[in-house]
Amino acid sequence: MWKPILVVIFGLASVWSELISGKYASYKSNDLIPIVLKGNYSQNYPTIINNTLSYLFLYDYMPNSTFQPPRVKVTLVEPENNDIIDPLIVVVRHRSGVISWQLPFIEKQQEIKYRYYKAAHILCPLLSASNNESGIVVSVSTNSPINNTFILRLDVQKSFNVLKDEYPLGLFIVFVVHSDNSACHRGNYQATNSRTKHIRFVVKPTVDFNYQIINCRTKACLYVSDLSKKDHRILKAKSSLYVWNLITVAVFYSLPVIQLVFTSQKVMLNETGNQDLCYYNFLCSHSFVLGPWKFSDFNHIFSNIGYIFFGLLFILITYKRECVNIPNKSQKFGIPNHCGLYYAMGSALAMEGLMSACYHICPNHSNFQFGNYFDTSFMYIICMLSMIKIYQTRHPDINANAYLVFGVLAFVIILGLTGIMYEGPILFILFTCLHLIMIFWLSAQIYYMGRWKLGILVNLGLAISHWIIKFGNFGNYLLILFMVNLILYLSFYIVMKLISKEKLHFWPLLYILLAMIFWSASLYFYVHKSSSWTVSLSAAESRTYNTPCTFMDFYDNHDIWHFLSAISLYLSFMVLFTLDDDVNNKPTATIPVF
Image (cartoon, rainbow, N blue to C red; front, side):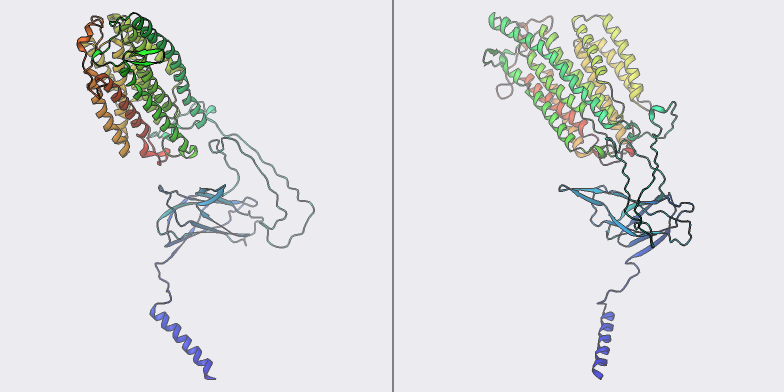
């Protein structure tokens, strides 16, 4: 008789002792704090949550909303490092049951996991105007110890908009008829042989940009998202035109140049034996025979391989970035990525090396006009493409027409060639007037907040300086104009980044520093050249400038200039390529335009 009583007593005593000793977890007020909020329709609720908080949102069915289904939408704000270990749990209790899901929602397709940070469910509509219906309860919780932000919104679903940007290939509208009413109907219902439903839907186009006659808008600050409204595929196709136009120009440039210089080498030099036709550095020139071709100054030809190598390397780097780029993400985060100009810049650098190598087969005054000037022409192309790329970075939709750009370059090349053949004051005065008018217009378009005045003053100073001291021939003066304006615009861009509180990462800073060092070294070896051709000096007289080989007993100062300038151009390209890496994960709606 006493045995069962004693067992119960000892059992209760054991439980009591364990409670006293703390072996049973007791509830603490700071373990979990439930927060109950009254929710309103069509209102966003951005909320911070962790494992110490749990939210309950209470909604009533909207009056006069019979047969109009409510739609609950929960968005989990994606963290910068995608470091979400514990998901967000969403539980919705409505008139016909309970549904739940987690965020991020992970869908696995063919061994690939897709993460979705936004999910929505359409709930059962109110089938009658009864006041006995209980409301909608949305519970949100997580086991994550770190803070996460979610946004909750409940709407009555009447109509919805479909953005073309989200469905570029079109979409399907599918209606599904259930076999019975059990999904949203409680109670007894009778089976019927007919499940016919009559549905009426209307698809209406919204107001497009083409329908706006006058669009008046004032905004304190313009952002990249405001200038990236066009279809990504269209902009990519327009950007690709640059490289195809460049390849076309390069083919038509290179064929006559190659024919000219090989004729000079074979007929004029090899057959006549006249060593005074080409301006060589005879103290450092090494011949090389390749089949039927004999090169008298092979080291000056081979040293141009750096341009070709670094041009192709830059193209490969651009291709790698384009392959790993995610189009949908690039439209919402960072600078929109259009690689056509980068491909054109890399191709122009490679062609620069090819044209320079052709010129050095037999450098003289005639070949400079038709050979080396084409080499200089590709420097014009590189400078102009770089400036267009800088401008396009913050103005994605304003893509300069490739045909117009190369048409302007053709005019510049014709003007430069005319200046080399006829160096008179009349041509220089006309060019200076045209140059200043163009700079005035471009500076007003590009620079902001009074900085256009600096661009005009710098170009006016260059024109006056050339009139007084002469920067060599007219082709060199044009090249100086292009390079100075490129440096000026790049400096403006970097200053505006810093003013906008954007940071320069390690790699662009390193590339800027290395580019400055290599450009300084390049200019030193370019000035200390080993041969010189002018109208007043013959090839024989230019030998007084000849110097012995200075590197590996094979290359002279001009060869070193080739190597260093190729590296300098590549580093300059990488500055543009990595300059905006700091905003890659920044929404385009927060990146300012300048």
